[in-house]
Amino acid sequence: MTLRAQVAAQWLRLAPREKTLVSVAVAAVAVALLWWVALQPALATLRTANAQHRELDAQLQRMRGLQDQAQSLQSQPKQGRVDAMRLLEQSVRERLGTSARMTIAGERVTLTLTGTEPHALAQWLTQARINARALAGEVHLSRNPAGLWEGTLVLSLPQG
Image (cartoon, rainbow, N blue to C red; front, side):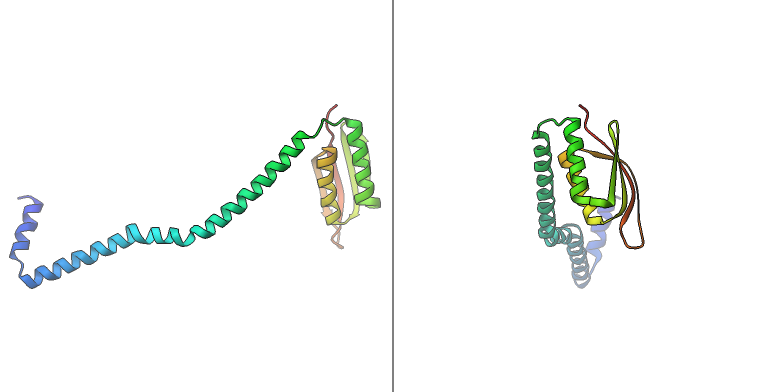
């Protein structure tokens, strides 16, 4: 006898009240299963959809900003080593003043910092990267007790 036939035979032996109770129990299990498998995950997704949408929109805006910045850097004309050195020296004088000393050896520029403000260094690094196209290759910095940067940065200048 198959399982289906056994269940059908057992069903026929049940009293009407027992059949009602079994039907209610099966319906309750079916509703609970439907809730846990289909409805609850969908409702959870709906609750978090707006927050995820805002987060993804913000991420998209950041990515577009980076894309615009990359395209503007790519569209700038090629820059020679002499121009890069001149722009780098000028930016050191303007942004870092006497707290930095610059030495040039071939394609490498070593910047020695003594008591440089963190904000000034961050602005200078951005300006050096964009204007002089200098890239930091080696950095040995530490903060003194006053919270100022000390150490060295080794930058590489563009070829040409």
